[in-house]
Image (cartoon, rainbow, N blue to C red; front, side):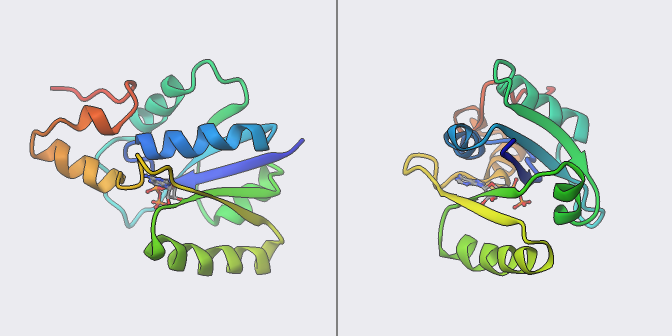
Length: 152
Ligand code: ADP
């Protein structure tokens, strides 16, 4: 079973994440979308909300699971027997940041990271921009899957 973990905060899931996940589906038998718990970060959405948004987005996709984890991502990958991590690349800053992490992870565990390049029409989207738009009452809906709903 070729299993990949797609780790992230997904606060909230965006069309950029959805694009990477959908395009990675033919590469793997199973993709676990893993929401990492980072106690230093303050989140806009609760874990339950973030999980629900992702589950609803991929409700018809049997190859996708949604979980949360704490600790090192490589330890989580070992626990669920995933030999690959999935990440998206938007720009040179992402590349530099991801390169060091992927090389460290491979050195420590042998787990390889598979990168997909962002699609041209979603490359500008980030969860932090979505949160900014949301906080200021803008039309965030065009940046996220339909499942992302906000309580008024
Ligand atoms: P993190 O907190 O780990 O940065 P994110 O939820 O922000 O988690 O992102 C998870 C992954 O999704 C990262 O690999 C990031 O580069 C990728 N990603 C985010 N937005 C996009 C996008 N618009 N296009 C491609 N990849 C993206």
